[in-house]
Image (cartoon, rainbow, N blue to C red; front, top):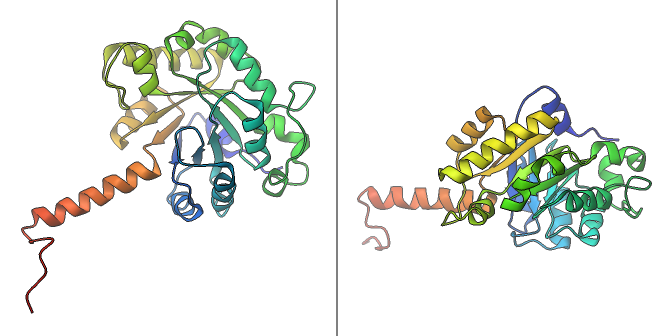
Length: 264
C-alpha cells in the first residue's frame, strides 16, 4: 500500500503544510497540489464540494505526491465511509466533543474488528494499491476537530481513544464557544490563545499530532514554532481572493485610470 507521507513527516518531528480545497474544481485542486503542499484537504463541510466533485478533486491531487485528506460534514458513517472509499488518507471530522464521539469516529474509519467500516474501496484501491484493505487501518489518519469548550474539557479523554493519532483545531468555532467574537482565524484573544497552547501541550503528552487552520504565513510559522505539526494555509478561495485583490489594488494605486477606455 502507498505509504502515508504525513506519518513520515511527523515521525521526524517536522510539521506538514496543508492546503485547503473548497472550490469544487479538479483543475483548481490540481493547481493547488502542484504548489508544494505536503497535504491537501478537500472540504466537504463548509466548502462548496459534493461527493462527485470531491472524487475528481482527489484524482487531481493524485497527479502529485501530496497526501489527500478530507473534512467530512459530520461524524456520520455514511459520509466517512464513502469519502474513504474515494481514496483519502485521512478524515478530519468536526465537532468531536467527547471520547464517545471520538470512539465513534474511529470505528467509522476502521474495518472490523476494530471498527464498522464497510468494505468497498472503489477508488481507494486504485490510489492506495491492491493490498489497500490489509493496511488501511494502519495508514489512514483519524483526525477529530477540537473546536468547543466541551472538547477542551474532555481533551485528555479524547486524546486517549485508541486510533486518534492527530487532532485539528478550528479556531473560529473555538472562539465562538469560548465567548470571543467575532469568530476568526489567527487568534490573539487570550482565551483562545491559551486553549491553543493547552491543546498542543496535551497532544505532545499523548503522542498525538496537533493541527490548526491559519489565515496567514506569519501565523502558520508561529503555530509550527508552538509545536503544531499540521498547519493549514488559508484555502484555495481565500488565496484566490487575496491575490486578485492585491493585484487589482496595485494597478489602481499606480495612478492608471483603471476602468477608463484609452483614447485612440
